[in-house]
Length: 438
Ligand SMILES: Cc1cc2nc3c(=O)[nH]c(=O)nc-3n(C[C@H](O)[C@H](O)[C@H](O)COP(=O)(O)OP(=O)(O)OC[C@H]3O[C@@H](n4cnc5c(N)ncnc54)[C@H](O)[C@@H]3O)c2cc1C
Image (cartoon, rainbow, N blue to C red; front, side, top):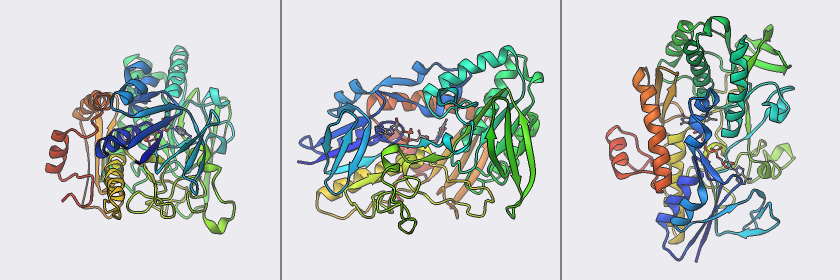
């Protein structure tokens, strides 16, 4: 009988655990290891940071829901991996054997790469919306800020790959300030590594440049692109601005009273520890130099064929290598769900002694909230050249994002990652999870 171990139980790991359980006969075992004992709906973090949601509105304890589905839950941190012996090591000192391992450990947040960067709990001078506890901390500071407002800086630093939430949080703060009648006291600047507004790490999606620039202008949010943040003190951000040839053309000292900048990501700590120091080995067989897991077109590690990986923790090369300041490629929700589906098919194939065949589509449908309106971005597939790409703005996106939050959390409690009506509706729109689903 086979044991499948999934490490991480968030946007990628939780649907993965439910779906692999459904794919396997009862005699096989599915184990989930997570360093936190609850599920947090990460896309709602920006709402938590302005008090529009409480952490408990977007969270639930994992164990009862997993156990009900016949999945074993371990509230532990994975601290080591021996791919030759098919074992992981847990923080309580125990070892866990696996036949198949699925790594869904998301990102480690690389605040340490810039002096003074990160939330107060990390010893820094900015806030973060990357985790739900960070967003709770950001909300406490937001309430203090609103008592004595001043300049805001929001954006994404060099090497970041996740840009959408920076725009979202900027617009959400702007909306909240208008609601509180404080907007006129708050100069806002968007500082980003992207070469232009709306690039999103994707070389743009439809006319995302025009759409997002127009929105920023309407909301009086200034911007600096091609930006590299060099240092952050208690009240000042130091930013070098580059031109497209890679020369520094300006150096800014930007005062702020409140700032949220998305960091660059790395792989989880135990994966960083597996990086081969020899530069010629590009990190080694399992991970790249930043600790992201290397995968082939089947979401499987090319060397260790019983290790699969999905989500933010995998290697995807930058879409736009021409950016003068490094910009990574975002790994978004629907794209991650397509990896889940592919991995389930491929492990099921492996168990029948067959080679994997399922390839995820990496399609992107992203709903970006702007507080009182929003923008939808569709990129099929996410990596250009694309079969379909568009961006549209409207209040319906704000409402759809609220509806999606409820829908996704309900599905994650029910253990149903892709209800049948969703599958058919998406298929009608030409959005499938596997390349073979035409
Ligand atoms: C603020 C924000 C908003 C976003 N909004 C959207 C959106 O609206 N739409 C969209 O498509 N995408 C969005 N994304 C991008 C992406 O969909 C999310 O980041 C998503 O949560 C990534 O899922 P993941 O499972 O790969 O990683 P994560 O959600 O980070 O999950 C990884 C899990 O693994 C656990 N873990 C890590 N290391 C270990 C270890 N060693 N042992 C055990 N457990 C471990 C972590 O605690 C975590 O629970 C957003 C991202 C952010 C940061």
